[in-house]
Length: 212
Image (tube, rainbow, N blue to C red; front, side, top):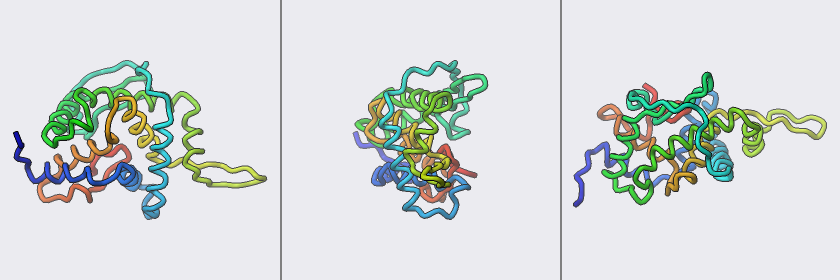
């Protein structure tokens, strides 16, 4: 049976025509520190961050305490990692909405049933890994953003938002997704957009949430 989609759902479905690198570049562009940066550079960083995330071993189970709660739709988040104390907040309302949207948009081949929760946990496991291990420095080198050179040495700068893209890429591989979770995050944001708003043009913060 063919579902009748709303205008917002058709806008969300059409996002699949964009590549995952574009979604990563948009996430970076939403971060104030990147204001005015060339979009081509942001795409290069997004592609490098995604490649880094894909190269990581499959995300292990999170060691932090997992707390399930509602409120994710209002926050525009599926999950959130807090380091003090180490906790993963899993937003069940947003996860359920994402699974329902996948069915309505006909994206089940890209996002297998039950994968949203798996990907959300895997994403936060990557943040846990980057927070406690050498991953941050390795990601900086992978991005190649040189901020200082001296005596034949180079100092690599932090690219805000790159860790999000890397976490999404690793989560996609761990959960067996056909596309980056950033596509699904954009689609959810398009559905939640105020009437008359252009979904693709709304500014977002560094975690992909729509700014208000």
